Length: 264
Ligand SMILES: NC(=O)c1ccc[n+]([C@@H]2O[C@H](COP(=O)([O-])OP(=O)(O)OC[C@H]3O[C@@H](n4cnc5c(N)ncnc54)[C@H](OP(=O)(O)O)[C@@H]3O)[C@@H](O)[C@H]2O)c1
Image (tube, rainbow, N blue to C red; front, side):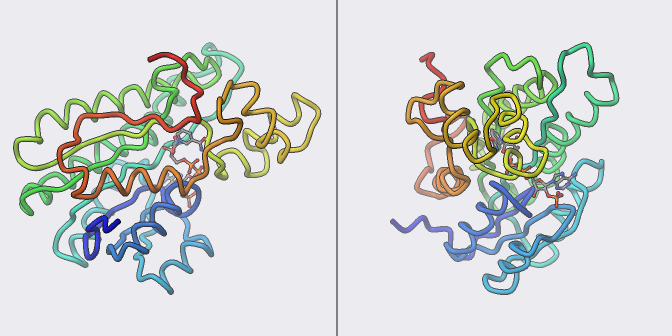
């Protein structure tokens, strides 16, 4: 299937590892010009830069001007932007809502919601100037489910899903589609990095991090397929939503969770 993404200019936030890296890789393989933002340039992102012409921009996207700087890099290099993927987001588990002070709420909202607000505000004038485009927001099933240990992250993701809907309504008449993807657990450094959620789950269940990801997480979270999602699967769905093939899809949220969410 030709996704018609060749030569499109695509900005991806949080792209040095995990889903963002898979996104940069997948868009680049479709022939898109990818501008990838993250604080560090990992060896994997560097390889994409060398072998697939991805532009890696070192930037802290939790700051007020970071997202604008990333969009300006893309426009400076290619003269336009066609697609924005707001992928950046981060959660820290704490025992209770009562353990999260204002500073932490602000930090998590800056990373998970305001980075997307700011990147969207920076990119929309360019999409309008180009006569259309697409924004895909990587939200989470947490936007709808109660996960008390990451209540701030879940609230920020609910905000991102809401932002998706409002932006889609305002900009659809001018050719801009805005959609969201809500993944369940995805095998990325978010889980698998030392001290990450896989280690925490392994410690609780007296097993290894690998066993936690492959068996304990799918079982304990009720993932019907019996496995977590892989990063490239989220990337594949994102590419479709960014593609002109999804030309009449906007304001929608797509769950990719192996059947974890049971409600209709
Ligand atoms: N993994 C899951 O189970 C899961 C499930 C549902 C939704 N999601 C969502 O999917 C998205 C990607 O998650 P992931 O699991 O791929 O995350 P990840 O493995 O933790 O990767 C996060 C990425 O964001 C970058 N980043 C972090 N802080 C940054 C900052 N201040 N400025 C710029 N870049 C920054 C990191 O690079 P640097 O450290 O180099 O900056 C890295 O490239 C997030 O929005 C997450 O909420 C993930």
